[in-house]
Length: 220
Image 1: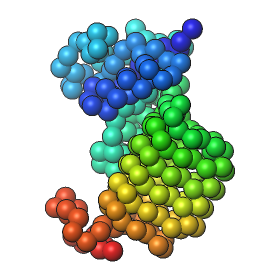
Image 2 (image 1 turned 180 degrees about the vertical axis):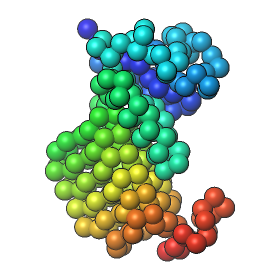
Image 3 (image 1 turned 60 degrees about the vertical axis):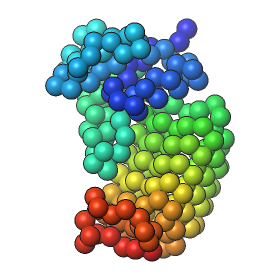
């Protein structure tokens, strides 16, 4: 019998979570939920959309698990906030790991979303509420702490530590045995060869920078 799952969110990320959990896991998605002020539909994929404030009335934590399907908005702060809000309601948070992922990790936390073609080498530790989009390499003995978002085709070499609430853009490369500090942004195609201080912003030459405060940018 499949486990019952409620997804927080009604955006494209929620669409993808619905697809992957429905087609490649032992979960059945039975409802979506979102804050009442953002709920503008009653059904999605022919299943109910309910207010998060009262979700436990019809889908109690004893019988249903939960997944927070949000992106990296505000450097993962919103996803982190809703992660803890669901835990406060008593829910168990589900993790999705694609069957097309090569996974030799030491441990993976809850509310993780790990898509196809990721290679996770031995002794890797992945915290809670981490998204690994498609096609990444996570090298041996690396630690991806909680509430991170790693986009596609990122190379994380061996022994790297990515501290909480970072965003790592498409095609970025992190050399071995470095630390990416808390709430850092590593832009698309950036090559990082040394430690990154907390709240660092590293972008490649020519990268669009209009949404990044110029005082925080380090070109590489």
